[in-house]
Length: 223
Image (cartoon, rainbow, N blue to C red; front, side):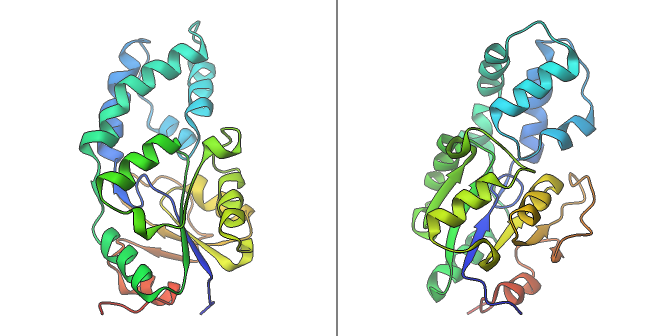
């Protein structure tokens, strides 16, 4: 077992359950543009910044709308995902609490979501004391996963070398970003939403309650 110095958490689908709500918001979002829902498109934009996903959406559907217009509509139709609907995934708060209580790892959120939305989630669930830093694609010129930029930024902000970090993720883009950053990666796999190849993961679990994730991170389970 590696002695990690820092644990970097993705947010959507890893700490909070947003997938169903994002699906509803996305289906509402695309009505304006009269395009069809394609599940594979969700995989493509998973972990990317709002700027990147809006550009991709415009290109995929050859839309005449500006990227700014697409972004504004996407923000408007998804705001309640974070402010109202998202809830912590089973085991998320307990895992964060155990890491904090044992005080043997630095921690960060490292997400493709905006910093504002990360703060919304952290404040809603009173997780402020559980993280040493919050890292967003806002900090890296809106470059999202699978580019490793947000993970490398988080490691630098924590003062920890990438090889001493482990990432907790749920997406293939996030896994690839972690590997490109030179970090190990645990995947929280959800059969409902997870699309992709996760064979490169160092560990795959169904839930953050799984004892295997505690053992892998070097965190005492259930005490």
